[in-house]
Length: 345
Image (cartoon, rainbow, N blue to C red):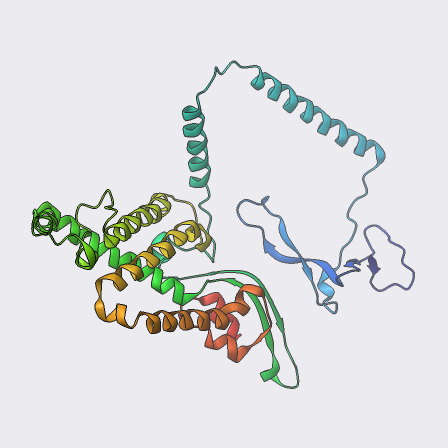
């Protein structure tokens, strides 16, 4: 709707009348924030926002010029001319003989185009993060925020957020699994290169210890590119290696990307790290007798901790209103600046 300021009769005079543009459904006014658009915007243009402060008189507009029908027709004619030129260029491009491309050629060309397009996304962003910060859950992404202030009692102020963070406990277990498996893999490669790993397996085979319970407790991870069906730890190590390779392949490309990166780029690799953590926990159960003895209590304790963290952080995923004091409890790290700054503002 149009709301004329300073007049009882809603007549608009050019360029004298000042009016506001009010959205009837949301009760918001369209106004200029007096901030320049980013570099990708048109030079000299200001940012236009929708404000919920109906008492703000800065949302006034005036009609600077009225375009006649002749000028409008000329503008439409110029637009149609540009459209015809673009259509002609498009048809000429379609008529060029490019030859038949194989699937591999199309696959390579498509990924080269995507990589080049991502290299051009180098603008600054306050929510961006680097790929080596993702396993440490250094920074999340704030998608939406709504604050409700109570003038009588500030302790009753509530904040609703949609903040991409995840379950910190799951994140911690997954990251520790990556670190532990990397150390184990280097140890295995070192022993194999020295000839100790293969000798251990061969000695067990000669002495007849590769059957029954003793084989299950042996370290069969040496030279386990092909899993042995009669060794549980061998199969677990093979699955762990497979999931680790999946995690690495989904993380390594971001090491050479120049574009701004965000936490959600890590989600495919994070799924592999969760699978790796399951493999590492199962390997720990098979290799450690004390852990295997109290495995029921260990697994229930881990499950309880993960569920407690989920219930603690679930308001951030669903945008549920919470108090400022509750939000302050969720500020586990100072690098979660969008979260911590909201709790104290």
